[in-house]
Amino acid sequence: MIEVKNLTKYYGDKLAVNDISFTVNDGEILGFLGSNGAGKSTTMNMITGYISSTSGSILVNGIDVLDEPIKAKAQIGYLPELPPLYLDMTVKSYLNFMYDLKKCKLPRKTHLSSICDLCKITDVKNRVIKHLSKGYKQRVGLAQALIGNPPVLILDEPTVGLDPNQIIEIKNLIKNLGRNHTVILSSHILSEIQAVCDRIIIIDKGRVAADDTTFNLSKKISDDHRLVVRIEGSKDEVMYELRKIDGIKYVRAEIEREPGVFEYEMEAMDGTDLRREVNAVTQKNGWVILLMQSKELTLEDIFFKITMGEVFSEKLSKPSEKKNNGGNE
Image (tube, rainbow, N blue to C red; front, side, top):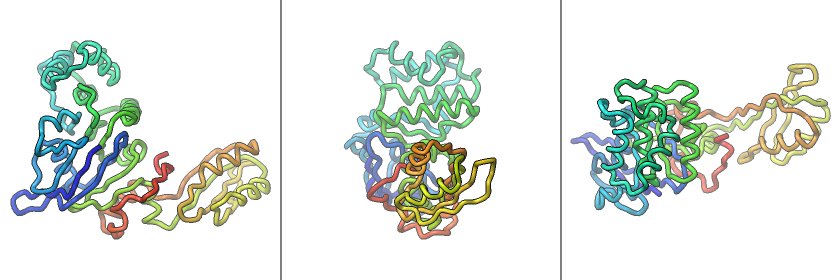
């Protein structure tokens, strides 16, 4: 667990981070977002112990980063945007060097081999790092962050330089790592954050402007809770069954998109996620869903509205008491 309490950072007379507080729970993947100059990178650097705070505290699994920096840093695996690589080393020698530097106690050969397999760099472990592609260098940087199996992972732009297939692999890897690690993930590709993260924090002008799931932030910002579904089945029967679902305000049948396939627009009451119920109804009746599209705001929409000052962020900076996982699927 990571606990950030009243964290403030000045650079001279410039206030970079302004009295922020938040918690990242065990096994949670947190998306950490902010525009350039918003204080995001400064906050991440303070959590890792790379720079000190002006005031406030950071606890990593109960260990204060300022009071016990070495012990706290041992809890963290960090991948900065520019991986800390020694380009004239081979991948194998670099990982062995990092193993020694971190004073890792796990079985060396087995541990490093499993990390190489996990990051898919086994086939290049004997190559000199400077001769690798940018994507492979990024993977090597991720591998060093995993040495010692730290309980907390902080990943800054982990998919930079990767091709589309590699991005999917890294996203799946991060999702799997979230089962046994606390993860803070920063990326400018907001669709990646939305797909992977359990919760989102947006930093704006040095303060926490939003803290919740994408689903809940969308609900707070917009009153539009519509769902569009294309279903293959009898129009009258589909309408009858959909109207019986709890939490539906209305259902409207749109045009016939294909023979026997109609598009239905429905709106939910506040706090209701219709998707699972709609899916259950169609399965029960033997119908086929050919499209399901939420009209909720995307993370890009939310980020733009907050950072451009279109919404009052006070109501967004405290997580909802009950999270709705529907926003991340």
